[in-house]
Image 1 (tube, one colour):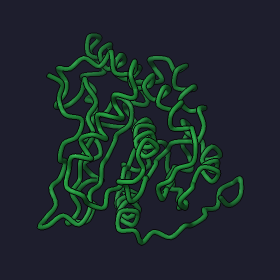
Image 2: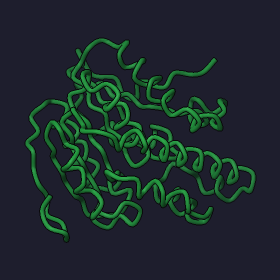
Image 3: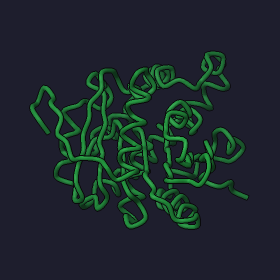
Image 4: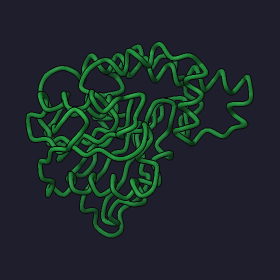
Length: 260
């Protein structure tokens, strides 16, 4: 029997004020985002999304996951809709942002906000990812944390990790075909790293054309995994909280390409 897509990463203290759903990058489980979960307000219920083949769903096959991206979207959405109603924000980083965007596009009504990190409004990043070598992927895994060196040093486990990562990247590419369609009818926050070599900052302003319910944008110093660095963990958590409580203000950011 397949495991559930969502689980509590951190329970709220007292009566929950709001709910945050964290969706991690390719190859990772939600525990890699625990530093972010711990910095959110104590009254927030924090859920994590786990795809097959990792963490608590390690024993489940991940090879079929990319073949039906709609099953991922519908599986997560069905579980969220079955929960008590709360102000709810979806947060996704990189491939996780593709999942979050597809969920919000499929059914925007339940969500107070959508926060996308290191994810462009266009298919370029997903297409680039499909051309990466195993060595490229190992560098990305090391940068993202959560994968012990002994795993990457073992031929058996390295092969497993590479297969999992490529499966996720294929899923991201197929989700891109969904998440790049139509306006986003949920208040949108877009975050990125100035020095991100995987998702260049020049690719993020295109979200202006998709933000049907307002756009807040913010860039941080750092690369693709800027959100795991101090002091950005707390700053990203503050952006998520702002989106969740509905007191966000649309804001432009200055980039080398000008304001957006």
